[in-house]
Amino acid sequence: MSRNKAVVAALAAALLAGPGIAQAAPQTAPAAAPQARVGAADITWRLERAGSPTEDQRTAYDQITRAMNAAVARYNNLSDLGKAITVRYEPGVPTADANLNGTIRFGSNRSYMTERTALHEIAHTVGVGLSSGWNSLAGGGTWRGAQATALVRQFDGPNAKISTGGQHFWPYGLNYENEFSNTAADRHVQIVAAMKRDGM
Figure (cartoon, rainbow, N blue to C red):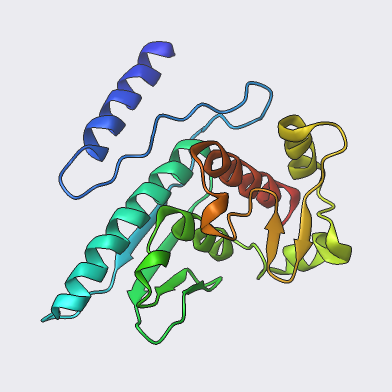
């Protein structure tokens, strides 16, 4: 089993190191968290591109590609979530947004074309803030699902909770760029996956 994991890790590292692909840092899930991937349906994504892109579009496509490759690699390393995502560059969008149907739109503000934003928007495509399960479990300002609550307590202590408001959660919701770190990003993915198991 450990030999198979080593082979998979080596193949994943080789694929991620290819040209134009941002490689996420090696990740380790907490030992007590049920994060082992068993035949998971991976998150996939594609970028809709103009036939004859302008210089602005080309630079946006490059930055979006780096952000999405890193975010999708992190989700696929640390969760068993599956989603087919379509990404668009739409300069009229103020920051970035996402839909439960799997669409993510990045606007012209380059400061939002980051892994942090991509992670956050992927969370929306799998249900954060948008699904009926979210509405059932996030009402009243605190997440009420047992698995995500147990996980945040593992991270932050026995009294920790996941606060909710509108379409967002915290801690680890990655709602702002200053919340990003490799640890916070890993925990974000693990919490979103736990929310999904809770019924989001």
